[in-house]
Amino acid sequence: MIIVIIGAQWGDEGKGKVVDLLADRFDIVSRYQGGHNAGHSVYVGDRAFVLRLLPSGIIHPDKTCVLGNGMVIDPKAFFEEVDQIAQQGIDVTPERLKVSSRAHLIMPYHRALDHTSEERLGNEKIGTTLRGIGPAYEDKAGRRGIRVADALSPDILKLRVERNLEEANRIIALFGNQPLRADEILEEITPLIERLRPFVAETSHFLSEAKKAGKKILLEGAQATLLDVDHGTYPYVTSSNPTAGGASVGAGIPPHHITGVLGIVRTYATRVGEGPFPTEMLDEEESMANLIRERGNEYGSVTRRPRRCGWFDAVATRYAAELNGFDSIALTKLDVLDALEEIKVCIGYEIAGERVDTFPAVSYDLSQIKPVYETLAGWQSNTVGVTQFDKLPELAQKYVRFLSDQIGVEIGLISTGPERDQTVILKDSVMEGWFSE
Figure: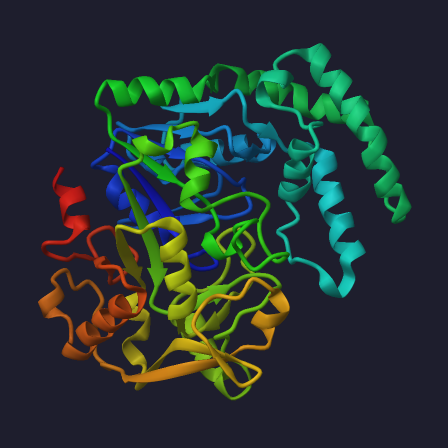
């Protein structure tokens, strides 16, 4: 069994908790794209773990984790995270964590270029986390990137750093910033590469052999569908493919070996950074946005930036379901809506007075959308920690069924709080089958 977990919105849907919950049923958890620009928060009892690069399965001591070839890895950030969770009692060893030799490295000049790129774009900036993710993927696509395997050779590493820095420094200096020095970069990066060496593996072969041996594999991405570089709200997107198709490429697994796709969806929507957000709560709804932000702790787990908040967008979520082929959906943060008297759901769009029921490709069209809402009654009672669907308030059950009907996919899991046991698994769902296998 190989299952892919996909965020269906703009990220921060609660993938970390769901991966952690499912990981106990799997042998291997693998990341397949992105870098340390997005964090997953996992709560176990009174302990909170914020994971940026490491798969959420690392918290389970008997699981093997993989950083796939589709990722971009900052060695400094990698070991900062490894050391941080080691202080929390989680041991990360080369036996437990495999890093793809084909993954690309984020270098110090990538971080500098990220800052420069945002300055250059001005009012049209993307709103990146400035961690060098985009420039690293640009170098990968431009065939000048440095892969983990390349960096293991000191001569190749030196040659490529010096070559790439010539071009990077021209851009950096053009915007009045201080050029970087190759010797200083090599002095910083070389000890980190040597420390990384024992973790490096041919991870696609490792996963292939694991499948042959009957091991269960969980594939985990960062960001989400609407940030996909091909299918998201371009150009306000990430630089990789968080969608299900990206899982096959980014982990090195044949598409037909993937047996299921799980979509993660919040009961409302959020977005970090710039870009169109059709259902964003603005103006007279600002107080509602603040209420949801505080109840849901909607602040970036890495950056602590406040997230933009909006109503559930069924049009965008249907689009995500079509792209990814969701077999089931995990609905998170139901409890955040407990205080609301009324809850809006966007069931369609209007652009220039015309009804649109599909997700537009052009960001300008998205920015001109007038959402068509259906308003449902709130349940205004406590759902925190409920573990059975029929124990939820009747109006909460109605809300869940309404979302499922709008998306066209079953909802198989409902999160009623941040901890593992604050979860409903719906009977006779695909999700229940995955839990029982």
